[in-house]
Image (cartoon, rainbow, N blue to C red; front, top):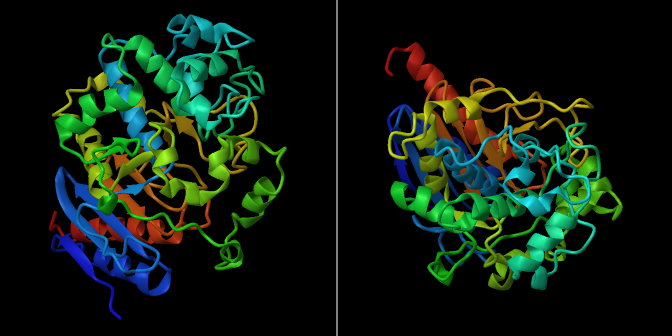
Length: 404
């Protein structure tokens, strides 16, 4: 049976549609969307497949899915607005904005170190229980008491859940209106740009809009020559590993089926509980890739986002992920392990299972891919990379032929 694919493709980008279809035919895709902007114009907007495991409900134009850590990019776009407004200095100490944060050896951690996942706060000694996550006052105190797991700035390790928890606390203290991060994002980015993206599965999202997340099966880790398998298996099977402690606290993350339950996903965690589609993510990144003409972000802020990452003094390898994915100001930056965009000026975020999105200011490209069938890679999911490569191949070909 031929998979239903709908949407729009500008002439010259047909190979992106071919790659999108091939994901269904050869790479086990169930439901997905892909969107690309080039020089401010939407040139790809595709969706197709099914939004549920049983394949009885079509993935439609406005279907939304949880995008896990691709949410971090949206949260960090919002944080850049705080900088553009002059409300936060990336070189300043976090404790200058949040006095309680200085407890237990955190007094000299800078905002930049925190957003680069170099603060040593990749997990918490206590469980992020459902009760704690729903009580921001208790959560704030728990975060403030935590001692860094290494000397800040000496190493880095993926702050899988905690990064946006700390961003949220800072946002509430810095924003003159005292808005939490998810509300700040809505009012400062989502509403002005008209994008359908929320942090937290709130009441505005109906059940028939949501794509069911389909976890990968253990056997799938062994297929397709997945070189990330040893790292993932070693981390998941060892409850004392950095990987386990970062990824699986809060405890509801242990069972991926929990991400189909509003009981958990309604919590507005800006690290992982973002709901959107490729169109919404790409449109947000397009705004930044083309100079922020709607949001009026200062040039100085954009230059900060586009600057190369600053590595810690120790190894380049991430202590949690055990691969080289550098972070800067909350965003992933290109590396030898995850090469995206045209240069170090590119920035974005990629989520568990395969989703992702980024801005490429060099070529004014914004790209995003969102799916519901989870893959088994730390990054570089074959479905996402096939679409990304097809996008750039099309642009290179059109440019070389003088058609762009």
